[in-house]
Image (cartoon, rainbow over all chains, first blue to last red; front, side, top):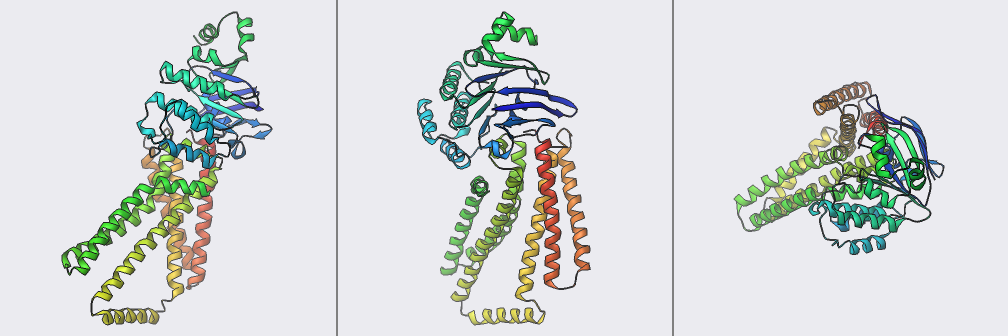
Length: 228
Length: 248
């Protein structure tokens, strides 16, 4: 489905991503792992069409990532990115206007489950509420690929559980979810495949169970071993 | 592109509401002064309306440039660039929106001014005198060969000049957040680039217009052609830099 082929991106002579080649298949939740500066966000932004690689390419179902694929991929940045003027209902309208795959009914159901009032201003939300709103609006698109950049950053345990539940319930056989995070304990609960990056390079990838068996340790122990 | 323009309007609506609110207040004061025979409030309202028109026109002109700067400097830029549109569609929509907003603002204030003048003329007995004055001014225009074509040409040239200014401003802002991203005085440098490019555009434009026959049509077409080239070049460079060098 999503093919990353020799993707390289440099900033000021330093490679943020360096020759990244791997495939994302539908029906899986991927963990994109690595410390700060390992190239996770850069790869996600390339995959979502926000930036262009210096070398290599990413394709979605054979189509090079760009304007056309933006309609089928969704990128959720780790930062708060809604316009300050927006209320929650404005966020809904915005996504509905720009993305034909936006499921309004699903979004409203998620809002109700997460105890949101559509009249709330986005600037008044706590970090936990903001994280839940971002995940609700992101997962309300019927996209092929969901790219979630550090979705657990700065939120408490209850908000994390709500985010995890929303992600798992949104997964279908024809889509893939890719999550980057430092919080390995959280990721280990939900991802089935891992991609480890270090200094922009791919150092290990595979299904979690296979990795656990071949490496003889848990994901957390492996993470420490790889990056310590 | 229409959806992008719609959300540009929504993002800029607060300033428009403030302008319309102030316009309504000043207009009410003007009407009270006019029909209540209160010269002072009417005078203040006329001065206020004049300043409001000038300020509104200036602010509306630069607001989309300020918004574009926010799109590149703040994380809300994701909202714009994640949409299924190319950077060229995004930039094009912003420029068209800016031009339409300026025209609409000019129409609103022009209409209000026209109606207020008409009310003054109807209120006071000297209506015939004012009408004679206007007729005389029009006659003088005719003597000077100031035709409808010349007025249209001037308006078109002003719009063209503004398109080039916006295109160059967008280019300077794009430079700030791409190639100059890590440079400490990037804002100052890009402002210098903006001034230099505008100077260069004016220089080329003046030389081009001097070389053309002294008639409205060829001069307008010449300026339009030059602006089209400058705007297209700026947009192409913007798009290239945004796709290659922007780190949102």
